[in-house]
Length: 441
Image (tube, rainbow, N blue to C red):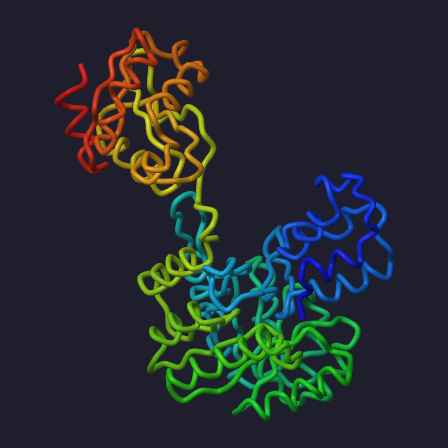
């Protein structure tokens, strides 16, 4: 169980030296309790205290890390039931299923289709991270050949499905173990012996919670801790109940057997609803059997929204941005550094015939109206930011366009920028092309 600030304080040396970056040990203890500092920052903390804090501070859901392309990606490590309590840490991974029963041409065509699913939204590249290779041919050599093709053509995580022990032994020699997950193995005990050194994550499959915990106990008894949980479900109610119950047991009750990431395999009938439910309610990996680009994009967008830190909006760096190839006569438009605002505004500018200087003001990632109401986007703040931006070296005019929703700051901005003309732009970004055509000269 997590320790309180006072309990952590009793483990600290109580020197109040300030070398950890805060003035007192009590303040540092409170930061540790809020999980916004690491105990190793204290130079005088004892090994015993580190061990206690390490155990107490570890998340109730185990973290599993994988090699993904040239990066690392993780699942698990969650600490809360609801994202507004703190945040969800590691987003749900989407896996697209492909069968080894396809002939080589069909297989390569399907693999290319999977690789083509990449979508850019508000500055982030969205794509499925996993491929699930299903053993339907029951031909070891064919399966291994298809596995080699996936491994060489993609950097995605590979989920091996329905494999026997011999296939698993040879698969381990073919693929980087940090890219593999074993799902629906045919012999659990034998598989655990095979992967004992590699510690490849294994999916523990069961029909109910009782059977699931028996399987987890078997894995833990053989010192296999890289476990992923999966329960078969007949309908959406069962999926919701099982996922919520597992998360609650791990986080609220501290039940170690439930403290692992969850994998959900969508069936053909409820693939849309079960994917949405899994993303919203605790599935760490979802395997999709039927998919198109049109069906994937809403899932990826939903996932991006759910796993954005609600206390830290998506934002971009403040500064001067070129939209098109602006020159010294091009318009200057000002807005906030909320990512969605930036990409919508810049997108509408691109739709116009005008290249523009787009000046982004640091408003702590808030949208225009929100920033104005929080006094983060006032005439004084915008004016001071413009003065320090160096924009006067890029343009030969002194005209600036502000968002229509904050026309109220125009007078204050004129007071701040004595020689400038402040123009009030449209309220909606969609009206920017028309505004520039009719107003800018």
